[in-house]
Image (cartoon, rainbow, N blue to C red; front, side, top):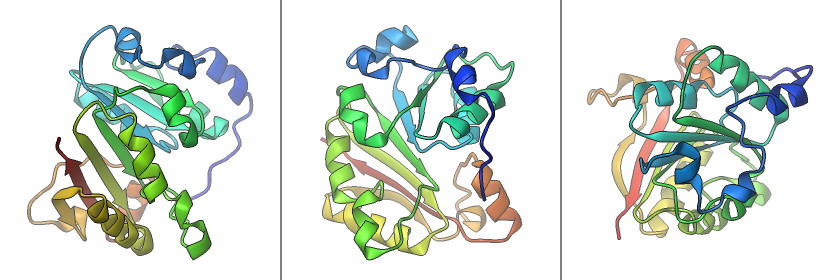
Length: 212
């Protein structure tokens, strides 16, 4: 699935109430941004924002942040919010490598939904479940660590299970075919996922935790 370049993306971002224009200035102050002490959940690589928007609608007692590096995709996410009023949702256009400059120990859950798989061996350090990223997450999790991952890519899924296990995460749930799992795992779909579901692709899923 390809994304189109959004004309006027910069202006859309500048004029949106959902965009945090100086995210690094909010480090250790995100509870003030949301004006409450509710758990903060972060999606890395949110794309068009369908997942994080619907999560914010479904769980008003949690706070949600979508982070995306691409301005056009971020602008599309803003458009997808439309006229919805979601006080528990904020959007950041930034590189995930800057996480520790944006957050202190403030995050309760990280969502990795259909992240770029970087299938080549030489690119594996770029995966969001590589050891270098897991070490970054250590510095932004509030206390207990919680990562939820969905992907259609076997290579990414296998390496994620291996890295998470080696990093002492435990698996609350694992599914090799999320949409046909007999356990009926609660799930909100992303735009990629909606398309993959129509194509009958299996979706791989893991809910991983590390409790202090």
